[in-house]
Image 1 (cartoon, rainbow, N blue to C red):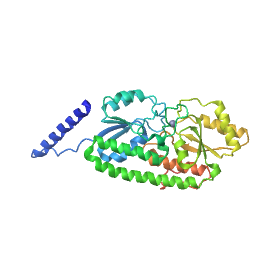
Image 2: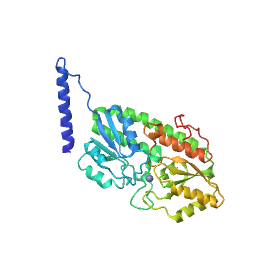
Image 3: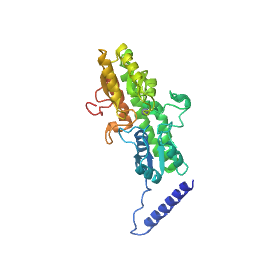
Length: 327
Ligand SMILES: [Zn+2]
């Protein structure tokens, strides 16, 4: 609280200086208010904050492409950025397991909001390993993620109430884009033969995806990448691949592909050819500055890649022709 009022005091001081400059003949032009400086843990949260905040915010994501949030621990640079920021947005639901203690402490000193924590419990999937926890991978269902996007909008509006109207308008545009993506996903997954609606990946990041689109999802590792992939689990999955003639399995950009390759080899040894259906963005988005490096691009890429590899019908370049060729 003291930090908040100190910040608004200095904002007022800046505003007065600005007014003084305008009043002075030949003075400096009035400066617009400095953008709200926001640090977000994951790229998905940062994407929402950027789209909603526009030029009223300056957003930095701590976890870039290929980074595993379950294992990520804050660096010195991250700590400095979070201490300096006006607002810190994190996911919660025990996604940032290694950062949680730091983030909770930081929350005693400055606005620090876990944007997925407030989701209604009845919409969450229970964590298989911890009965008192939930599966954190809610961004895998764009309609569920929309509720988190609204939380980001409300949080930004609390910090910059004078920009609330613009934030609401930007959010409406972004949410319409997410709804279009969800509709595209429904269509392309609907074209996958029912018996082929099985998604085998490196870790259990796709339960919300499976629930939204009627896919059975099987991960080699559990919900967190921190659990060991057992040989027994690999053998079980090889049996399933062979028995059900599953055509493709998928690697993830933020998890080692070693265990997925073990599945392919195991199935081949039993005379069943399984393809690597492509690389999915599970817990991190694609390269910064590309379409795949945005949340809509991430979802478009996954929907397009999965449906094409499992016998469905989807345009090679995705919903709006924006996916990189051969991605
Ligand atoms: Zn994960």
